[in-house]
Length: 89
Ligand SMILES: [Zn+2]
Image (tube, rainbow, N blue to C red):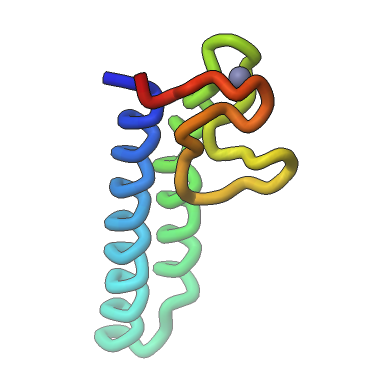
């Protein structure tokens, strides 16, 4: 599987994790009347789940696939933003 495909899968996982985290916080808030701790848990879990993002680097120059020049986006590049290597092959 190409780097782009793997990075894309990671993006989808993160999207579902984010939706789940929001539902979790809202759910806890509804049941217990406060969600400060649930919110903290959700943030830590999301950061932890997002760790593999750092591994999606261009095999030629090492540029992260999610990085457009200096901006980090939640969707990966099809071509490396630095050396223009095609990451979907
Ligand atoms: Zn590159």
